Length: 247
Image 1 (tube, rainbow, N blue to C red):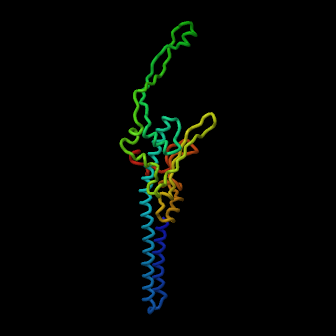
Image 2 (cartoon, rainbow, N blue to C red; image 1 turned 180 degrees about the vertical axis):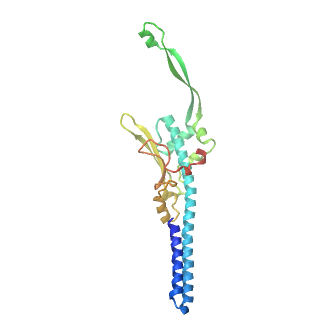
Image 3 (cartoon, rainbow, N blue to C red; image 1 turned 90 degrees about the vertical axis):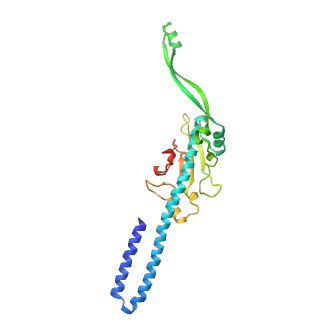
């Protein structure tokens, strides 16, 4: 919006200058002044075009990179949820998480309701037969965590790397427990700083992006999933960025 306002202001100023030259400048000076004016207009137009084009190019680059980053974060989240299902907590490092993916197994279980004798109640009432409903859980088989989450893909081996960032830059990963002493709940968080994702882009545009605030934008200086302050496993991005495979 600011760019559009700027362009309108430049056009209005140009019209005003042309009018002033025609009305107040002597005829013998109009030609050289007009030449200088046109040079200035072309220069200003070029700068304005570049400014608009740079914003558009940055926006497209940003969207492409954020989409790749979010795909990795979703893989980390799915892996963490599987880890918690088996271990009762989240992993606080990638070595444990990857080892679990490669060696861990899910139990395939079957639950069924049945009726059995309530021995305690039967004894309490002098032998009158009482029954109760219980749920029996049977383990039918085990299935590989890797096959369940990633099929034949090995992308889990690089999911910790931030796409487009400098080589060796990984998502910051934390895990722990929150709550009172009587009820501790496991939490985790993985995040990538926008500055790392866009490290090779115009610094002014990156700083502006870090301050972005819109329902269609990621309103933070980082892209993250999970939280160390509350029990949540969703990300901080709008639905427009959701990977297709998870829609």
